[in-house]
Length: 198
Image (cartoon, helix red, strand yellow):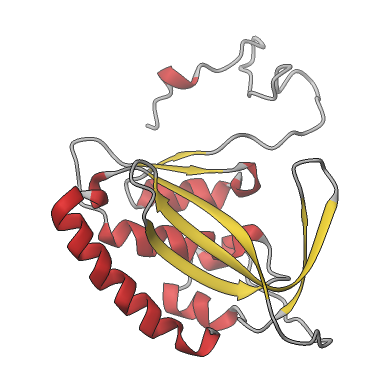
């Protein structure tokens, strides 16, 4: 599977171009998330390498990032919707989906041990290349696992608007409100509809 990803990616891009001619899918907003993919091979112990952080990835090319991320089957763990750990042997698929028509615009496969945010920057970059510009910047919706400064910086550098819920952090010194939204010096919650990125 992992050995023939370039062929699948090329076929998917050709198919997406045909669909775009009919349905205009490259003008839609995008959602990015990760899913577990189980391998049908016998589990083997592997020595997993240290992967580049999102901070390091910002200064790397997309190809250089992808070269550092392995795509062999390994053990992975995620928390399910009930907060319990779910273990599997296989891969993680990072998917960029059009939010209206739900077509897969981009996909990368990594070893299951990689964190969800590992392939975020390459996925954002590759997906943004195919998007057709509109008057307003397209929105990229990601879950709170992607709440990292570098993800916001990458999206803004590509003229994209990220929508990411904030990670829950311990309340301290009035810096966040009861809903974990940032507060100003007077401890008023920021209103997101009035956010000015200047």
